[in-house]
Length: 156
Image (cartoon, rainbow, N blue to C red):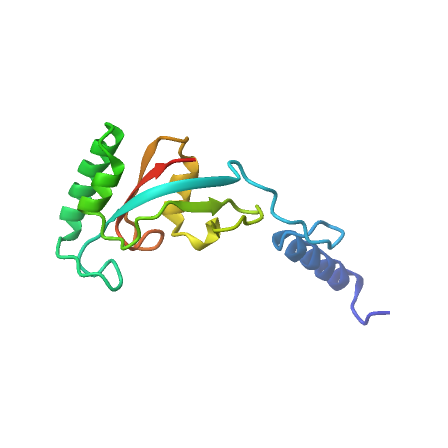
């Protein structure tokens, strides 16, 4: 006997099953890996429009409202077909100019890829929602995108 009454034992059993399911386990207690998400792998180019204090290690002098207006303008220009590399060189506050390769949740990394969960949330959500050769805008959010606005071009 476990020392618990039948009601307490039933509550504890229900709690254990609930915690296991919340942790990604089946009712049998076996951990179920996160199923692969679609698309599984993407490649993007991006530019970052930051504002005073938003980009660590980079001096940015524009206000938050100026950054938002510029980001919206650059986004419209990129969607209109303006050269993304030129826009990046002119406006990006990110030191990176590289194409970024990303594996989605539950997908094995390939050489040179980042895992989606290492990205800023709004960046990842926007990038994975894009079709190849399309442009998106990941808006500033203090919790989910604290660096500013990302204009993202999905290349693969």
